[in-house]
Image (cartoon, rainbow, N blue to C red; front, side):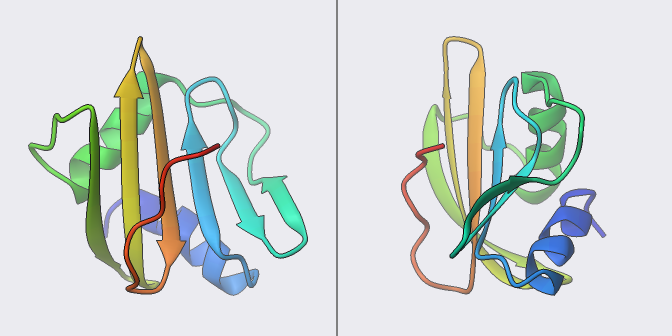
Length: 102
């Protein structure tokens, strides 16, 4: 099981819609009621890259989308990189990946 699956399971179990990862921000869950931090620590670009390497190995593009079948169910992922900042969004379900906007 990939490390990110624990976050994705928390999103599903809490009724959330998206997992949001962004450099300098805590991992967050987006739901109909808004965005809530899932931890008290912030993520570095390197930490996000480690999580992404497990679920999208070899993907080094500045911007890409991909499906991910997590242990918590299907998610659509979107990643954007630039200027040392990494942003990733995982939307519950198998629909097309969302645009990254955190």
